Image 1: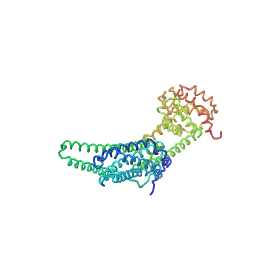
Image 2: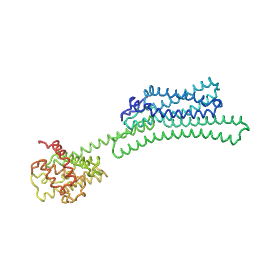
Image 3: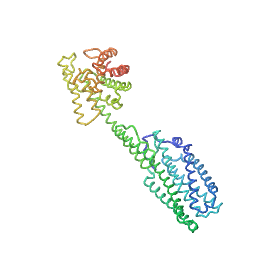
Image 4: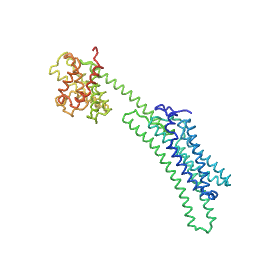
Length: 509
């Protein structure tokens, strides 16, 4: 028998099985209550279908029945611990069903033999009792099988583990056909036995009881049996629906997460059937999307870095400037979140997008003439006006790309940063003269990161400033050049700025 490749998540081992699905006190109570209900129902059923059982006192019949059910409980508990944990976990639910039904068959055979030997019951009475026990045993087997699956589902959700899915499983359609067929057969058999016994009873009574009273008595028995069977069926449907709901809710959450671009979550496999196989293929799909997305992101990031580096090679700045400024932006954004400012926009995803798009802040410099861009001295006013156009050039180029590719949050941040990182808080910046919060948050973050890096870096027209001198200049620009909240964040994380500067040094320094 081949096993499907389910090594997408950790597999539940035998130790996990023993720990999380053991025959504990809660399960013991569930089994004990179910068995006591069966004892009561069989006592009533036996009296209704068999005159020989009716001839016994309730204590005689109940004592032997209770004794056998108690023995069945002990045998079940022993076999559960000793043997079930040795089977493949994918098959335990099926074996648990077979075990429960086999134990009820054993109990009914022993009781039939005992009643025949001790009370001289005819074989027909024994078969009637056996049928009743097997019908209730059938319901009990389904209930305990579903209960085991529920415990396994809960365990899988907590431990993020799954069962080893196998190809040769019992299809749900066959399970449903089997369940409905046995249910119809058992219900009809029980009702026919009750009706047969009642007809004999009415015939024996003759004129001693009115037809109305006889009809009421027969109807009451049929209603009792019908209600009992209905309650069992409804309980089984409810339990199965909860198990199915757990799978569907997990599937919905995982697919919703994948639709939003999060491929980190996988669907636990906790049933060895079509739903387990669906979960398996869902996980394969998510892993495939994760691999493809990772490849695309790597290609995107490499392309971005290449373009940004190309732009920097035409400038007096270096590639390390790209790395430093994008790390400054990330640290500033994370500090704003930690200090409780601007939390709504600064999600983990958005901070990562800002970090990855930051290297394109000066992409517009490719449109600046070399005589200005590479001039080894201070620019004239006219030259500086031309230099200032790089922000608009970069923004326009990225906007055109964004229009071509459609809505793209990454390109949106890249465009914001490129066009607005030279805007100033007081409205005196360029190219649009935006003021205050009209400047995109990504641009305000980049403004401080870019200026700080320019201050601490050596240029042909200035030496590299110390961190303290750069900090003082930034403090002077608080509320003028820079967003005051971002300056405050800078003061909270200035040590991180120093470490970034030390990590990403310019070549030859």
